[in-house]
Image 1 (cartoon, rainbow, N blue to C red):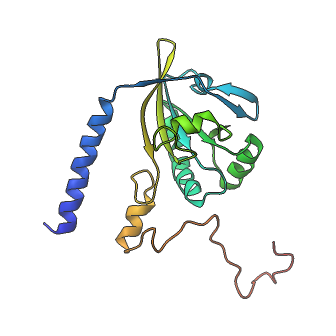
Image 2 (cartoon, rainbow, N blue to C red; image 1 turned 90 degrees about the vertical axis):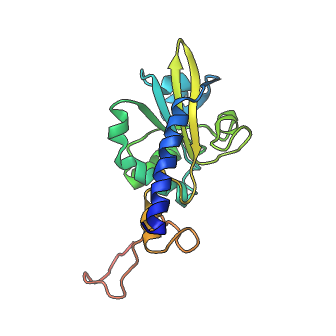
Amino acid sequence: MSEIEKTEAEIMRLAKKLAALRKETKPVEVKNYEFETLSGKVTLEELFAGREILFAIHNMGQGCRYCTLWADGMNGFLPHLEDRFAVVLLSKDPPEAQRRFANTRGWRYRMASHGGGDYIKEQGGGGEGDDNNPGLVCYERKEGKIFRKNRAQFGPNDVYCPIWPILSLAGFGEENWTPQYSYWKRPAIMDDGGSDLR
């Protein structure tokens, strides 16, 4: 077995251990935070949309190419998650800006704005007091209360964005690859004549 194969096996073993630890996590009660949406104010409890479990994606907003990369990827399996759970994408951007940007990306997320307030400071993926860190939080409702079950931070080489292991096969990583909003470049010669190009 090669060193790569041994390392892959170890990563799989640790992933199973991590899943078991998360299953045993003692939930932490949280307050019923308030958010802004295109339809007005909503509470964290309302974001559950009648479900018992809510995944809240913490996105730094349209100014972050990395957060856009994670949201692009998760958008693909959103229907699989929403079959069983509630899912919402949260950022500091105002609701109108969120929706405009989501439309340019083809995102189907329900969205809400925390506005950079108490929610993200207290529930950010890096721990208490962190401001606007990208990540994912799992909340659950029990007996009229809201609990945080687990949370994780996003970052290059994490397990939440499959592009990193794919890039590693080519020897690439965050040191020599950065996501972009768009990869189209104008050709030197436009086959259609190139008039009125925007």
